[in-house]
Image (tube, rainbow over all chains, first blue to last red; front, side, top):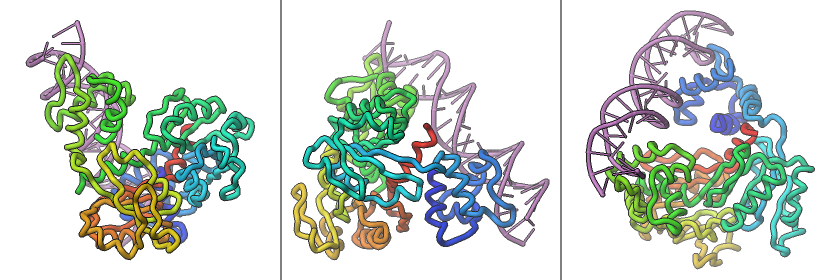
Length: 190
Length: 190
DNA sequence: GCATGTGAAAATCTTCACAGCA
DNA sequence: TGCTGTGAAGATTTTCACATGC
């Protein structure tokens, strides 16, 4: 579903409707895969016409729990963290990086993209501020303690950029992006 | 295999041997999955003992074509690109970011982590320098033209950080990391 | 006894093919 | 006619269970 959503968002300013066949071509997958996947969530399209892209986006956003705007916190405002703060791509999925934290006094108080960098000791306030998503972009040695602090602050989902395996209670969902590992997949194909 | 490699690299400074059971626990997967996967590439372990971690790492690196050191080029030295240049995690997989390119005259000539930033017009030299992997970290509007230039320069594998779908000849392998899309997967679970 | 490697079984995922609707 | 939604078939992946080797 996230992949379909991304494809549809990219297509939405070009077309009004799309068939499963055309979306499949765009995403380089099989068309009945798409129809089958959508069918698990009920009917989305019109026979003979296809899918209304804007409606479909709304529907998928609802399924993915993206129809309400979400606030996310960023922990670690080094190079990677700064890149994330400056990245404009979150908005179209219904996200806002609403808070940023670091432990470096030189960074605290600065502002990037209208977000003021706070001291990491203020993490517990996330609960009160109703921020339940976080992005970890700290050095690897600090990843686990950051995760612990986030969980304590009531965070329910974490996007983790450290290559370390972080341990959290299983009610908390972690998605890890290990850039080096992704790069390491390439030589196999060449 | 990349996931196994990462786990083993993390474990290698703690243990000498590991059983499929223990590795499975560490990675939160099923143990026969691991044995089955390894069996496709021949026998790796010793019954009654398990797997020699260092040997296993060597073996998997060979399978993934990581046993020779690879050079990679980075295109786009903004925030994200700088983070990638500064990231120390590539080395353990056998990688080196050996070149960096940008089109901003203010950045060209600077050095980050012993890599001098070159003008993007020098991309064609990648072929001569035997660099066949590249990382695209440019603004989204420049992603496709960057990919085109890389393909022309003989690059065979691309790690793409732009959310746009880039089109390349099918002999070129592209792995896309869309940070916003990954974050968008979290709210479903919470 | 302990853990691998592997056929066989079970579960899941993908594709086919077509009835039915716009 | 064109395309959806979906049972059924086919393909693949995952798990089981155990004979074999250290």
